[in-house]
Image (cartoon, rainbow, N blue to C red):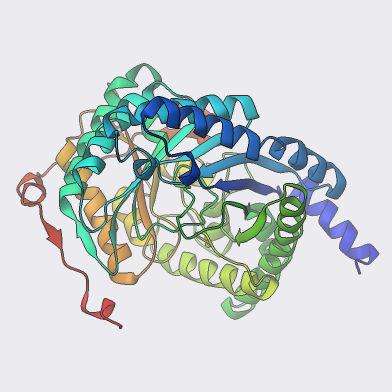
Length: 451
């Protein structure tokens, strides 16, 4: 039972501390849609997605009104399209465009799953599929794409890493009129998970049921507000406060997820515990770290603070729900976090420090704008570094970088809304091309041999 204090606390979290359900994402299996050609498959995909998710916006709106908690995004994820289009990979774009039309019809924010899983090797059909990504992302608005290039069990597919550097460059070039916006919808993973509700990396895993509801909770502002109440506490007390706050946030997420699944006739999948920031002041992971005692995010001590935050969020969340999954932790997307944006503009944080931080949080180098003339080999090397952190530490890591055409360090790109704005951050000017050109497979670490 909720008492009067609980009700007031929740109202305060929503009105003053930016508590929200960041996303309700319906995962849908497209395996029943495979037909003899791309056109028939695309038509079947459109019909299935529109039929299965027809009420997702309506139900989210109803739940938000009934429980008084904003539900910011309504999304759909689907089976990796490279699997659906294996017999006709050059025409996979027809399915991508059908999915984008379905997203428009449903009125959802994003649709994820124009994806390929090539962590151990890249079949011919998968390479052909990946080659379609730039054109498809340039000609669609809501479709998101991801490619998994490594795992702790298989190692890192460096041939795929090399290709993805080239794909990111090409995607930026053909969306140059929008500052390379296509790259904001493209993420490269190591250890991708099958139940991630967050874009741009969401896809519906083949081990999932035919329709599943996954919810991503948020609440950086709630955590920051809680820490403001204990300015002189020691770090054990800080961790305890974060745990208790994460517990409350997760309970709200589980309530919404359970009810949404029931009303949408789908299975309840997971609650993703990730603290997902926005460009709004007071809704920032960076500002939580500064509340812990850092003058600016990026200074010495940042990685330690982030590690403690991430661990405490997970401990509090798993106490609140037995269905925790997805990515779960703290996101540090530069363009989507006002504290990160301002630190990058001041020069207090750089890509090297962000890379170190990704060793202890979810998920990786996210929404980072880099100079437009950054080479494909350098982008591939950035991907390889991040994948190595994920592979060795048995965690999900990812890269979503935007080489902004015509922009240089000191400039800025502005994508608006939740995607925010991003100052162009410098990259190292020494070449990694010989390393990237070697290709092959970086073997899995010895500790992966657990059978």
